[in-house]
Image (tube, rainbow, N blue to C red):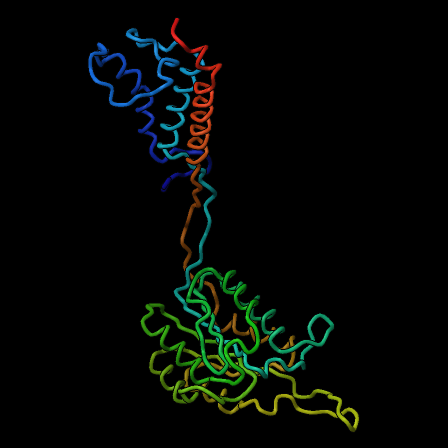
Length: 340
């Protein structure tokens, strides 16, 4: 695969295969010519166009040249030409981080402002949490979506860009309209239990209380603590919102259902912290704090990207072979190549 090369640029993975280039000419010189008495194993209708009978010499220089080029291109492709890129540093932290995002019906509450317009909570979470995910290069990051049920949307992967994209494509109510906080934590424990990572982290974001699921949140927190899973909980939602009704406008608390006590207890029992996000700026600050609490800094693995280029000479050989076949099979080509 081109390992161990000190400089970047073009190289051949198996250069020794170039020694096969003169093989057809060596066989022609070393093998006795056929006397024509044997039975033909394959009938080629245009054989006379490229063969010269007993002498074995090619009568058509163009076809001989194409045949030689096709062979050389195939030998060159078999030597695996490659382009070796510059050396890159790949940070490896040994940390597995799961992000559990609430997509229940209450996340549709429009009490947030993003880019000077009123939006629901999930829009802000997608923007801020998506940026947080993409910054976690070096960690394996996974995504859990939960409502009435909890689903593993993305398994743990170094592909943070894809994980952020799948978060952006999530929709409210996709997992049900209620909130299963305990099941989300339980699913994270199940997925991280067999991992060998030194640090295992769950960031759980919700705007409500546990109203569904088979596992109670505090029971799930006990499971997480026993497995060494650190849980950071984030309660999202504004504390004041003006709404219109029959009697005019009034101010309400859209986060009245947020169970902060349970979220705080979950974090304390697992060695994490509880955060409160009342707006987009507050949520962004929370994820900056999480970056500080769980830094990406780690050992560095040296990699050198390698791009395979064998398909270019192989494709050229195929194109030349097709051209030669069309040339010899055409009536004019057969007449020109017919024996005198």
